Image (cartoon, rainbow, N blue to C red; front, side, top):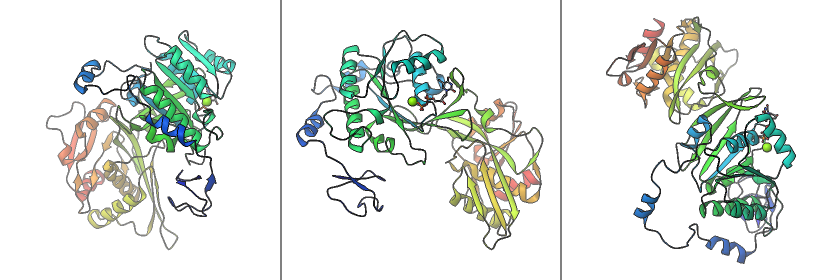
Amino acid sequence: MHVCDACHGESPKWQGQCPHCGAWNTLTAQIAPAAGRASATRRASLTPTGGASGLAEAMRATPEGSTRTGVGMGELDRVLGGGLVPGSVTLIGGEPGIGKSTLLLQVAQGIAGSPAVLYATGEESVDQVAMRARRLEGAFGHVQVVAQTDLDTILELTARIKPALLIVDSIQTMALASVPSAAGAVTQLRECTAALVRQAKSSATAVVIVGHVTKDGAIAGPRMLEHLVDTVLYFERDAGSRFRRVRAAKNRFGAAHELGFFLMQDNGLREVKNPAAIFLSRAPQPVIGSLVMVTRDGTRPLLVEVQGLVDASRLGAPRRVAQGIDAGRLAMVLAVLNRHGGIGLQEHDVFANVVGGLDIDEPAWDLPVALALASSLREFALPPDLVVFGELGLTGEVRPVTFGEERIREAAKLGYRRALVPEANVPRQAVEGIEVRGVARIEDAIRKVLG
Ligand code: TYD
Ligand code: MG
């Protein structure tokens, strides 16, 4: 069988171009797993008895909320949807050196009530794991370590110890003897993950799998494994920053897009419970082209500074650079500003930026970015105690966003005294400590903020 390096699509014979994704010269030969064995594993049942169960009975047996295991870090528990679910499989991806092993050793340590944890590493020796554990300081009495790359051995150990949590660090180093390709190869990655999923589903052991993501952003392993597991987390950072964030890309047991923030210290990762510090580097005096908005990541509001800069263009085609927001939508915001707001930027280079390296993929940034750009053009400084959010429509209307009141409350809690929001998002009852003004149209908003 031939597998594409780009999309991992399979083709029976070699071709110059991948029939699945159209990439050229990406097919490499792989040996398919023996047919008999593959079908045998496919037939395996995910319930211990192999029979059918009454759903109502099963619902009574596992009441909501009773089944989660807290990992001792509130930020991570929230991203997971309230802790680890027994029998679930979580994949955590991230570039080498970002701190995945550190995070998971802390998870092993923090598991509530100290049931057994098995930490299987194919990357380090037991001594090296012990060295890291020493840095983390704390009790590891309930943690067993095995340095092993043979997954069959790890699965046997798991069946014997029956740990509450099995950590596999990393999937790229693991191999099943029954699969002829080398560790890290496409078929090996997939078969190993499938074996771990079967193990988890037929027991109460939660499994967390580490997957390395290559530096250039092409996700060699994890992307292809996403559909096999219950939850996919990505561990990310901005270049040079000690801050880390864990993002839920998929979560069968919680909200996707949820973010958790951490700081890497000498003795491990520390939770950052108030991430405002990362995204709000604003000076306390009025600033031209800078504005604080309230966005949402998963289930909580997050205050983020957005910046706009416009500059007379010296080239024929003015530049439009968007960092952290969608460039196509920025073009739409510029058109709305021009046609309805009286702010023409056709002869200007336009730069828009979200501070702190966050990507905002909800339209609530439309209005704040529009106002930041208008502020830059008019050289009019915006007040530092103001927050703005709102979506713009093509006719110049300011449209409401979800969870308006919650956003306003969060801003008030963090000390902001004024909010400019879509009219339909103005709370019926005043929110203490913050003056909320509603706007229905872009020209209205520009008049209220820039005079
Ligand atoms: P690690 O968990 O080994 O990363 P990964 O498993 O994702 O490859 O962490 C690697 C980095 O973290 C390494 O450069 C050392 C640093 N580190 C700290 O700064 N403080 C600590 O307490 C620990 C354990 C590691
Ligand atoms: Mg590691």
